[in-house]
Image 1 (tube, rainbow, N blue to C red):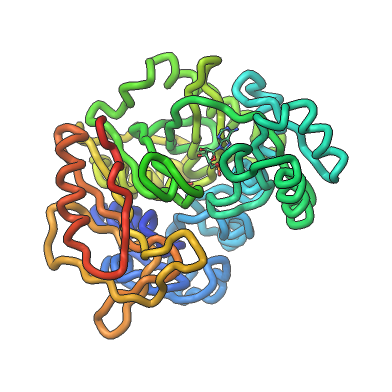
Image 2: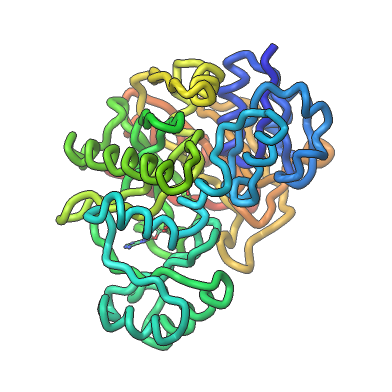
Length: 417
Ligand code: AMP
Ligand code: GLY
């Protein structure tokens, strides 16, 4: 039987685990915290640092690995595995930089797809920040940290930054952290996510997804890892034209080709493009080197093709074209009260119904004596399918309301779609 190492312990990894389980593989899961959903699908559970592959028992019997989150990719987990001859679905450190360094990503795109990015300046000191403010215009400034921030680092003038002093202070704080920071023009439009399977040369897209990053209804409040998402039964999004989708895909292909030329390495894994449809065309907000969270739940739940076949085809360098059920999906994240603030309610019990029509994916929770508890991060993804987005939405919220405990959720995911 094929033995697959799955690295990570969130709802995204629970969705990957469920897809691999359906494909009949034997799962070895490596987690920092025991996710009860992943554990129940795994042959072997190994608890510890996600990048410390040496500590995983029976490593030599693993056929290939799938890396869920970005942090271990940024630490070179794919390089470590491949040096032990374990192929990895997840790029090597040097090419994962498309996510792990926003400076690298903007510079790459300025070469391979210059019309797809906003005006930007890379700042290394206060005087560079002053220059950027003059070039871009204070009121249009977005400060984007170079390194990883769990989706919470971008700050926008007029929303999170109120005056020049705020911009200077935050930019300098990020320069002190990472050595540099991106200052760029604020784009206006509607966002969309394109996730794709990449075998080094080919980019094969999955159904498109819309996600909701802000903490509160009506897109108010700080950015979070995302509070929910939806996808349509036709796998497109009604606000996008065929040519918008084609533009996004050609930007992703240019990025993959550019990465190979720059580094000499093939990108093997999942490439996630976050785009914005603006009045001046499709622009790149960011790339991620992994499935989205929650977007993995939207696509993997309805993937008909075996996840094992898909992942093996990435490793072989001949990526397949997967089939997906013609179903709409809506995912609502249940989070602890207070998330994403300092007053987040940790270690509170969450009660989930024994059965529900929706799929339940555990995120950042832990199990003790048969009970499930919150941490400081998102707790549970509830994913419903339906023939329309409205049907899926109704089902998802029906089940979300049945989750007990000190939790909250956005009430407007996929509203009016
Ligand atoms: P990121 O961490 O790069 O995905 O950014 C988080 C969120 O910040 C995105 O989903 C956007 O809503 C917003 N954002 C990032 N860059 C820009 C930009 N240049 N213009 C407008 N919004 C942005
Ligand atoms: N949904 C946002 C992310 O996965 O980065």
